[in-house]
Length: 71
Image (tube, rainbow, N blue to C red):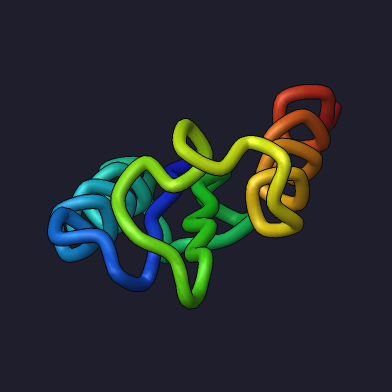
């Protein structure tokens, strides 16, 4: 899983990395390649460190935990 935020100045790099990993695994982003790109809209770079209690940070953490714990 690659995480990026809409206002992150490195968003393009995160997307490029996720796409490259998916291509190396023989597919596109998503379950088939086992690579997921999680983009958080309306937030900036490392927003989860500065606002750990905001809804978006909690939602991102929930999705990351679910991804890690998936079979």
